Length: 128
Image (cartoon, rainbow, N blue to C red):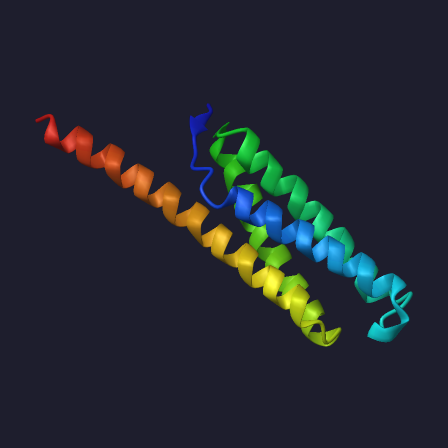
């Protein structure tokens, strides 16, 4: 059974993943960064692509099953944590900043869902 979920913050995660992918491409091809041709940058770029796809699914399909919602929320937070750690090891502050932006979007989404459920509960209780 599908139910409406909040799309708050999903577009912020989309923006953060696009920034992370752009920085990865820049780092991969620019010799001055010291990361030219490294596998870590490719890994972060692939993770950013997966985060982009998951956040687009959250933004475009607000009516989704609780199982899909849980999968998207958990996979995005794991992606944020892993990409942040990889950005730290790659010494790329822009990747870490993009992941911080994604974390803000993720929090907005999770808090938005909780706030929407709270409002629905309050409306039901007020009818009595």
